[in-house]
Image (cartoon, rainbow, N blue to C red; front, side, top):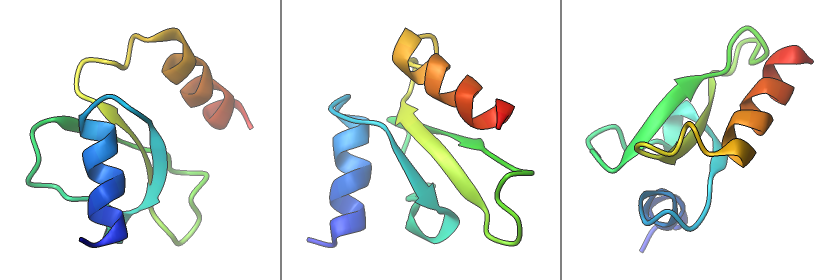
Length: 70
């Protein structure tokens, strides 16, 4: 099993959230949601991914806010 697939699967199961480069995202999944973090990404596009529906969970909201305010 590819380690990036494992990361995507753990996020989909609600066991973690993560920052991934665009190349590591499995876009065909419906159990995870993606949020672009630009303009922080520069020339690399990065995403904060979390289980679908968990964007209102305070730790994820706090992390997203922290990233966007830096």
